[in-house]
Structures are given as C-alpha cells and as structure tokens.
Length: 314
Image (cartoon, rainbow, N blue to C red; front, side, top):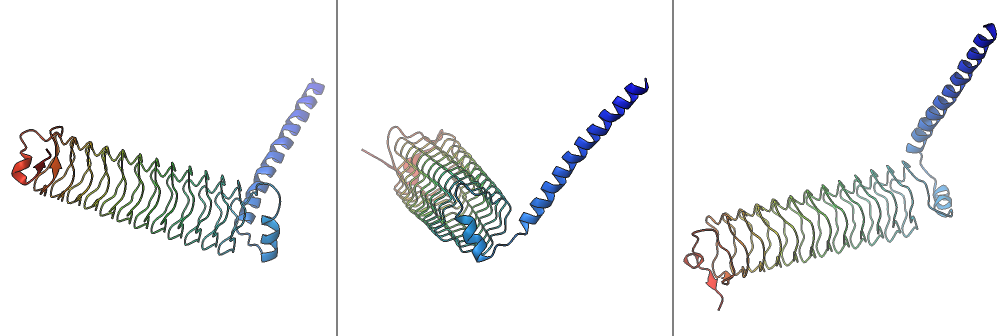
C-alpha cells in the first residue's frame, strides 16, 4: 500500500510540474506580447527587420510614424500593430494580416493591399488614394474621413465599415460588398459600383453624381438627401429604399426596382424610368417633371404620371 501511495504521489508531483511549466509558458507569452506592444525600432533595426527573408511576424509592434515607403511586406503578420502616421506609399502589403491594426492618418498612396485581411482596422483620416484593395477583407473597418480617391476596391468586403465623410471620387467598388456600411456624407462622384452589394447601407446626404450603380443591390438602404444626379442606376434594386429628398435628376433608372421605395419630395426631373417598377412606392410631393417612362413602367396603383409632368416615350 505504501508503494502505491508513493507512486500516486510521484504522479501528482509530475502533473503539478507539467501544469506549472504550461502556466510559465503562458505567463512568458503574455510578457513577451506586452514587451512587443511597446517595442520601438531604431532606423537600423527597422531596416534589418524588413530585409529579412520570408513573411514577417510583426504582430502588435509599434511602427507609428515609421518611414516604410515602397517596402515589401507581402503576407506579413501585422495584426494589432500600431502604424499611426506611418509612410507606406507604394508599399506592398498584399495578402498581409492587418486585423485590428491602427493606421490612423497613415499615408498609403498607391499601396498594394490586394487580398489582404484588414478586419476591424482603423484607417481614420488615412490617405489611401490610388491604393489597391482588390479582394481585401475590410469588414468593420474604420475609414472615417479617409481619402480613397481612385482606389481599387473591386470585390472587397466592407460589410459594416465606417466610411463617414470619406472621399471616394473615382473609386472602383465593382462587385464589392458594402452591406450595412455607413457612408453618410461621402463624396463618391464618378465612381464604379456596378454589381455592388449595398443592402441596408447608409448613404444619407452622399454626393454620388455621375456614378455607375448598374445592377447594384441597394434594397432597404437609407439614401435620404443623397445626390444621384446623372448617375446610372439601370437594373438596380432600390426596393424599400429611403429616398426622400434625394436628387435623381437625369438619372438612368431603366429596369430599376423601386418597389415600396420612399420617394417623398425626391427630385426626378428628366430621369428615365422606362421599364422601372414603382409599385407601392411613395411618390408624395416628388418632382417628376419631364420624367421619361414607357408602357412597361409600373406605377403605384391609381397614380397618374402624366398629371405630374411625366412623359410617355413613343
């Protein structure tokens, strides 16, 4: 019996040792993480670091205000890193992991972030003009007041992103997913949003003049006071969208789905509604002067388009 008790005691001691070793590993990892979080690099250390072969592991490092113009950080792990104010013009960050990283006021003009992962990233006030985000994941990203003129966001994921007051002139959102994103007061003129998924997006007071929304899904979106003047919305889904006081003058709305849309006090002067569906739409006090429509156009029950100045195309 004594031998058995001694054996059990030895096993318990060994298990305790293993547990303590695991605990020590965890504590060491936490301390290392804390050390990395406050680590700052000298210019020499930074040069040595970015010139090492293979994908770099730079999670949680402090690279704020660093000069990283043109560096190759392809597939680098920069999760949680601090890059506030960093210079990353023409940098290569394709397929990099920047989840939860902070790049507030950073400069990434013409940077390549193709297929990068940027979930929850903070790019507030950053200059991303001409940057390539094709296929990138920007879910929940903070892009408030960011500059994205001429940026390529083709097929990018921006679900739930914050783009309030962002400048997006000439940006390419072809096939991008902007579901639930907040684009209040953005400047999105002369941009490409063909086939974009924009369900429940907020574009209140946005400037969208001369942009292409062909076949885009804007259903249930908030578009109050938005300016779509001379934009192409052909085949777009605007069902149940809130378009009160929106400017749709000279817009191409052919084959658009406006079922149940709120168009109260909307300005549609010279718009083309040929083959559009406006069944159950609210057109109270909307300006339909010289709006073009054809025999395929579906109006709300009992609505007389000619009585408000719309013109039937011959």
